[in-house]
Length: 314
Image (tube, rainbow, N blue to C red; front, top):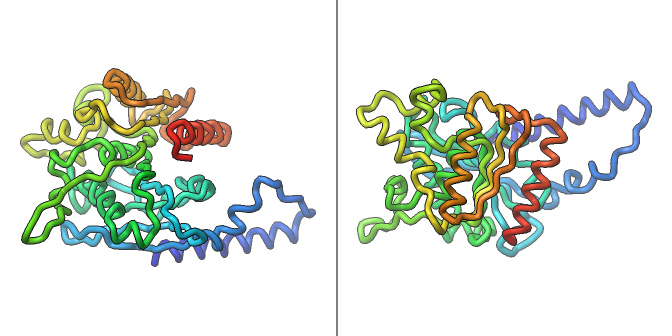
């Protein structure tokens, strides 16, 4: 219930602050663009918090599902993976990152996954793919009105990597074996196709992060000291799986990112283009590792909406 507590706490704080400010300052007209969707969010959405989608490493892995309650037909659905270098972060702190999708009227699935303190690589990749399998399964599709033809995966930083992994890595790689279906009489580890991937400054080549000028401690820690570290890193790198037939990809990256080098975006974009994949790269000039300013975020979401419209998902 941590999500509900967080939302209630946030709303209470806003109410208290608003009451205090209104008592201290003259009335100010609310801008028209600030009204409407937030006021009626409770009429339009219901939240299923902490839904268990997999048990692994002795831990129940959870997701929060924000579902449209004002319609009964299948809805476009965003699957969101939080960032934190696979070592920190949580789904419960990610609400603000996907609020624009709530405003756009999409269902949102907010995924938690195993961090390094529970399990190193490739655990988070397994979880990302298993979460996608779970939400695209018939029971969840019916219960939460998921349109399986309009599932978009996205995430920030490590979450961007996981979104790319979920949308690009095939079942033959074996990462969905941990959540395979079929029981005692069959075997099904298929990866559901997604309609698009929106990659916010995600890691695309893990080996690039293990040594040399682009080495980063969070990646080195996540991969660990296993004997086959380079093979493991390659097996969970999105660049490994670039091929024709992938879904459209929009990458958003600051060209001065000190945490995930900008070259991860440019190399992915170039490789996808050569493979004939529908790909766009939105560069934030002088942008760092997220935390983009209001003007940049306005431009980014204008691009996101244009991208969705162009591929007929809006």
